[in-house]
Image 1 (cartoon, rainbow, N blue to C red):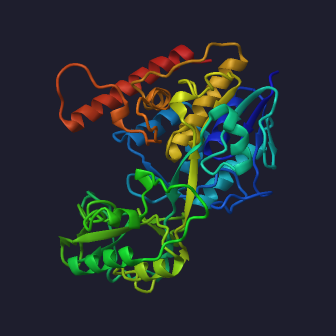
Image 2 (image 1 turned 90 degrees about the vertical axis):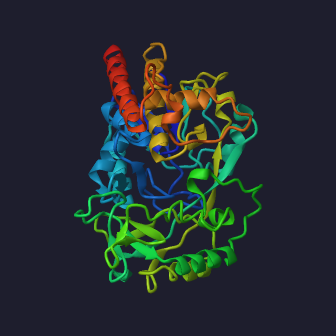
Length: 437
């Protein structure tokens, strides 16, 4: 049987390995941890989450939620592990990071058709099918080895949010609530309200803050969906108030009114002993982060368990390198999956691994590679990485704008989204029935 090598045991690599092994196809999965860690990783387990513990929206009326639903339909390992290790997060799917990574590691290690080799790969295997799922922090040696295949490497900067201890939050000020939830619901998020003067002082201090210097990196290119707070503040004084700090739908129980701005915290683990500051990715220095966090009402004495950090993400110019199967246009034995392939986000990375696993299984079984319906989230993702016509390709989260418009009458937004979801479900069901083993 054709040898299959998967480089990288993150979300995409683990998902691809699982899909192949579940179809009785043996694979070799390479992971450089614990022999070597990237600047952002610290857990020797597979599928370690770095930027956030949230896999974002879980309802199918959001494009990210629809993508998760489609992956569950196709037997995703990552989605199963996420459900098993989830923490309270309203309508979002957030997980206990350590439990999540441990669950996936146990499943992968126990599978008889998956061989894990813990060593850094610095050159592509010369034989067999290769799935490059080395992630956004691909090592310099491997990135250099990939250059003949992908040409100029692209990158943007990504940042992680701070985490505070739950028992150090002042609950006389902070309150539990979800945006837009019924008033009677306790809520999964902890909210810290700011009045106008507190908010203005807060952003003033962010603007004054010292930043961690880049380490000989190129021009800093920040991804819009994971922008540091200091970059948002630089865009204007109200950017945060209309972004991650928007108070819409969050009434302070002390006043029964919305505050001027509200900082939200989301549970980091199942025991709810740790909470991360939602949308607070930053590259401020640690001492300055401490000053900023302690300015937030309710967090004046918060114990900071992890400070925010910033790192560079690497991705390829997918539309000019890959076809809709995530396969190299010229080297058909090589596939790319995960964020290096040009997708952005945990669910999208997982989905690309699932897609590639299914494509490679078809290739091994001498079947034609397949195309998901473009009306589905999986199909829209495949189309985006291969058909982007912009001169400056950038990774993008799945969204309904990537899905072909509906035919017929014009609809209101909610009616339109429900129609998108129903069409996607029907088309995936039909596709699945036609491609069932």
